[in-house]
Image (cartoon, helix red, strand yellow):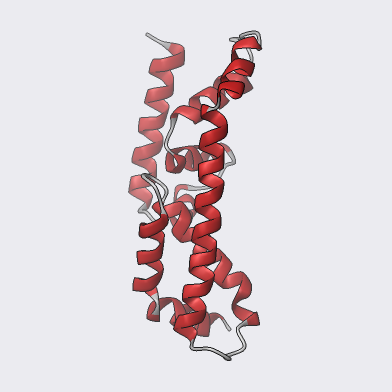
Length: 158
């Protein structure tokens, strides 16, 4: 089954990339692309062949992209809502709480960098993180170093 799935991805690479790029917002392409691949993998066994494989790929990819985009929009709307901002203002500042500091910092990062930081904190190797994000191990190490420097300059100082 793995070989057939890999061949299907190779045959439909352009379609999948186009859908991910068309429906993703800035910095979300890699996440959406990975989500589409995940959904294709999860539903691959259920492909019965009643339609052409390309049609099925489009259907799964478009449904995944639309769902992904709706969720991303909802999250952004919630964070920008006056109610969310009012609640944030009412909460007492907890500068000494490490989890709050980390959450604030992660909110300031792009989705990709926040995902990368989570993987780093979970102990994933740069090779494993690179595979998840579809970038090179060197790029992962470089981004981690930049993220660490950014955190240090924001929260630790000189």
